[in-house]
Length: 105
Image (cartoon, rainbow, N blue to C red):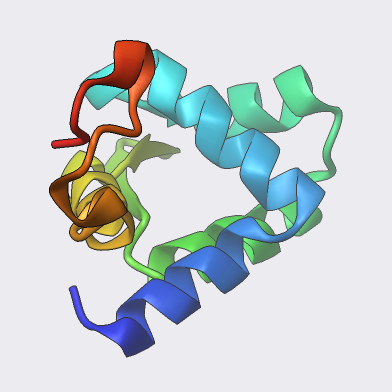
């Protein structure tokens, strides 16, 4: 993941509704969740949900699949791990700084 992709992903997550959508889908795991269920769970209108999911998808954080007439969204865990890896790649220059003074990895 390059710096431009990181900025795009962080910008997509820097909005309360999109962050809530993403966190909900991370909890759901690889099976994801139907768009209607996401909207109902978070109290978001379908049009608003569509707008936010499009932003997260363009940032590479969500994947979409169609099953019949239902649209399912799921977190892109590879992109999430790449983002976290980018953010922690040079954590504390190998010095102890993590939990229990262990080096970050």
